[in-house]
Image (cartoon, rainbow, N blue to C red):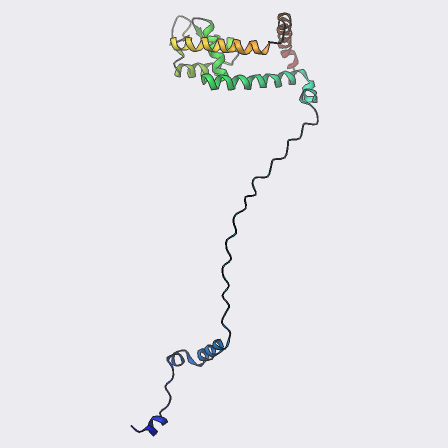
Length: 213
């Protein structure tokens, strides 16, 4: 083939032009004319700043001292408030040391007073309703602290007695209760304690009258 015939041969199109068409070629030429993007280095990670937990605002005092609050100017409300604090303290004490709730403690103290008792007597001595006394006795039986015997001697009633282990626990409960009682009245004279008991019994006698309506 001569050089003149090679000159007349049509130029070969590129693969990109033949496949993508003229629009792609035009876009390629436009891209070639734009400046290359500037690479921006990544910013280093900033260390985490521990701002901590904001301090809790100081509790504001009550506008009126508890003992002077109007609700505590009613004798019954005041006695119930004091009784609640005493009960909470006693419950924490006997629960943490003997794993006994207050109902179980009262039932144990009642059962320990006599060699044998029926559930109704336990309820009366422990100042519990019959259902609560019966439940407490069953819980104590499950702990192995009391035994329950069904008998015909007392009208088919169940006889409740301390087990040997229960007698040991009862002694410790009684000693603990005496220590706590001594701390409670440590600032009272014997005469004041007698007066306090007398006044509390008179308050108790007035409860039915207060609740009459």
